[in-house]
Image 1 (spheres, helix red, strand yellow):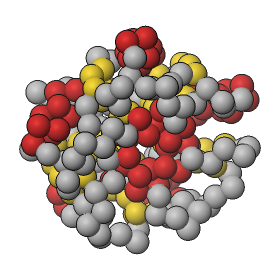
Image 2 (cartoon, helix red, strand yellow):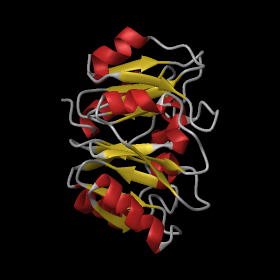
Image 3 (spheres, helix red, strand yellow):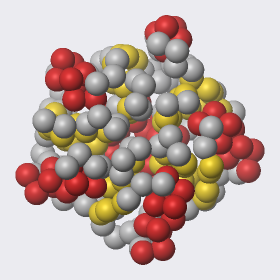
Image 4 (spheres, one colour):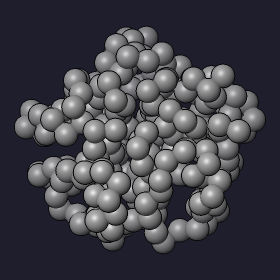
Length: 220
């Protein structure tokens, strides 16, 4: 299976607690999860960590194959393990902290919260080595919460406009579709952890939702 269901201590909102690229996955050290199955689906090493003593890794951190981004206000636990895998963590200065919510990125581009200042956007572009554009999804500025993207496809909040969807497809250079997860939750970025190899959705995700995730992210 390239898309499976899972929970963290019976919590279905996996995208809030974990993040993944095509090089590494970062999962919360404090919460229980099926590690062997997660590694098999995502096919990358999993580092157990916390960001700023918080398990909300998926909200506080984002990245792609070029590197990871978090706020310089927070320490990242087990940072030496990232270095051992050749993965760098760039800490971005400023008042913004929830980079997992603020950014929707893959290896080709990034859509970011339109309130981010130019200097932060410059940091993001340099760290991720991609083109960065401000945008919204369904009118929502926290695009990382409203979508999930890999190098094969993107799944977006079902209320996304045609222009917003087109911008995602243009900047990320992948086809995009709409859907929900965790039994009707529109903020799919908070429900799903995915890369180009597979995806893990919250345990309350329905069968039809799994099918849409598989299709949108290019697994079928």
